[in-house]
Image (cartoon, rainbow over all chains, first blue to last red; front, side):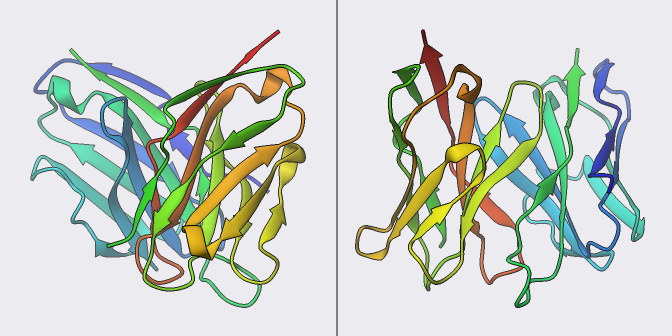
Length: 117
Length: 114
């Protein structure tokens, strides 16, 4: 079974440009998470969805960041306009509802490394 | 609020030596606990998890971890480290109830010397 798929793997852009990161979760998973990883702050949760509905977006740094999940198999994280301090690795992860057989572990994509010049 | 502390930022061990990575957590109830590993340029991979039952849990790649409620700890161990174990290791707990997002520690970078 395919894992979480993220694109692009690397993105280099100039300050002020719009950046769109994409994620395809594992089929059948009903939770999707966006994390950001930096040296200074570690892994930070930005937003997560359950059944395509945003549940907690308190980690989204500012209005320049937005995330959508139009269907169960696709999500985007958009930064507009981008700034150099947005440079980081952005991870998407998915998981399945916790029940007697599942304990809520997250499955991560390989990340999108964003560099804003 | 839930939190995770990994006291060691960087650890170096000799190949073949034993390893213990520390993790302390703050959680309101019996926690689910996770250890993940991240190799350079890769995503995070689950090593092992604790959710109930036996407090000593076995994971992949020969790792194990022990849940100690009295010490609020979930330390990761391996009896004999291999050079391929060099990576960054993260401990995590759910942010609230089970089935929600995970909060990660800052991570411990493991270097293996020959």
